[in-house]
Image (cartoon, rainbow, N blue to C red; front, top):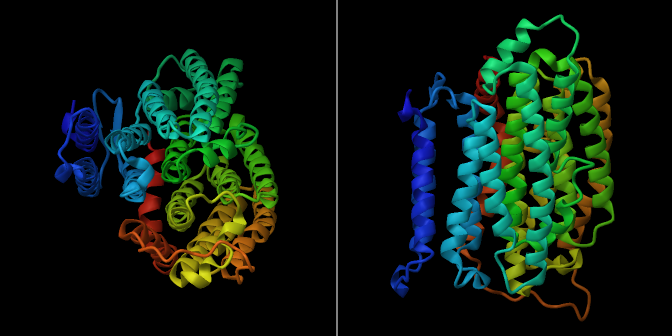
Length: 482
């Protein structure tokens, strides 16, 4: 047992416990920022360890954890998303009196996400998914004085619990079909069964796991909770759900399908491909009719899950490589967009409609530029990171003989241009007479830093795509090794 290999999880867990303990300890006013600093220190230290551990696979706790390039690279996505969430909440007036538990719960969710992508066993994978889910249930409902927040937490709890029940049943059937819960053991067992007829038990397990992970990833038709929860949850939490949770869910998809059950790909490639198609189409069409910016971003997130599922459906190293690259780009684009939404929220107290952003780009040109970059990159305009990611995903589908996925993805991207450009047009339009003026409040450095970092990543990941693709290829190859 190499327990030291799990140092990233030790440090993150310690930071989580300390931050949660501070929630019940009366702190003097001079120490009121201590939970945030604990969160910053824990995330930065964990990220440094994750970078230092890059290399060959290590296992801990008899293979329950696999610390390899795949898990570490996804950790590089999850931790910045968690850090951005804490920065978003810094100084938030509505967070007064609950800041310690907010930070602790964000760290707990991030720990669950890390555990998910570093899992070497179905049991560990389930624990990781449940840890992140429970923390997010509470975060969605943390604004107890706001009815929409409580409603979003309850809706997420109910639908998430359904997904959990289906997931554990699917894992149980997969164990019954292979006789092991180890992801490596499952891969070896299915390799030995290669060429034999598919077992009904295995097929049933695959279907149930796809459904359950579809709930977590907001894939259609398991997406029904997403728009309401995204709209009702505090915006920093919504941003975290749209980034960190997406990375963890896609990591779980890759671990189970591209990794453990690769030899049974004939049983799931078409199923996940169909799921990707429906998700892309419904997500983009749903976003077209939204008047709320948060609901529009929720439907956009659903559509983006469809694009990401292409990388799972093809079941190849190229598909996994493209998916990981696009996850990096997607997180940068999404955080940049939500940073602008949060900035506008602080100035007008509530942003329920897209029209609340009318003229905001003219009043805050830098924010207008950030939102414009985020929107056109999400739409897939060249030469930004979103275009590169989609090009790689569609290319991997063509190489794998699934050109129909690439065609649908390209058409869905064309549809998405309508609602993404609508945001840009509204941002740069002149505010109508009688409209609520933009109050010239001081721009919070914490929010501005995330916005700028997200915008820079959109450009940088396109210009210097090759280094990240090299890292992504290494992570994808690690995934394919039993």
